[in-house]
Image (cartoon, rainbow, N blue to C red; front, side, top):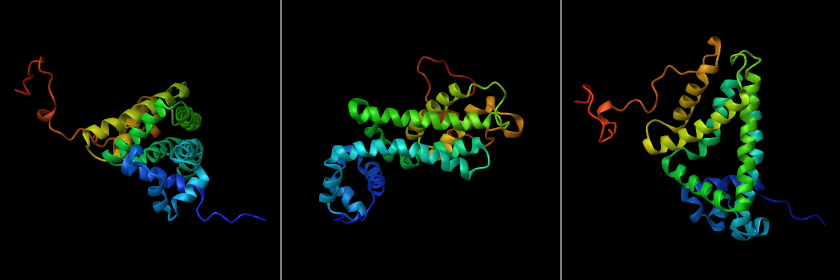
Length: 229
């Protein structure tokens, strides 16, 4: 006899898990909290995932699938590959849209780095994202969005490094939104590689450039400039 249909898909539960992690961090994550988020009882999650660790492993596995799905959707929804790329990287970081959420997801990454099983899935997700970025850059080149001869494989690695670093810098400086900061840094990175009709550098003021120079920290051993005096 067929079993009872599942009222809530695993994907919905895993998205709820990511949401709870954003609010309370991995240390505060419980099966009960996730169950409340999706309207289930904790026992249902135990049946499906076995434990909190099993839930975290399933979330890590899902992130690999999400990397491919979001890349395809971004390309379909935007007219150019570079616009799709900007939308893609901001979507990947969207769950970390406050410094507190960023810190909680960063704590989850710390688990990935120290747990061999979680690290394996985190690395797979990282590489899937790299492939997605490289595919978009590779499609931008023949479309005339990138200069001829651009090393799209190397540039894909730089995109990952810059956007990840932009997130951490934004969480520290807390100026503007995360999406604004990431898109600005991405377009600044791509600017030397783009053709004139597809220039990706934004003319808008950098989200972090609104502070007065006098407010910036100065190295104690560096003499004051005339502007600082």
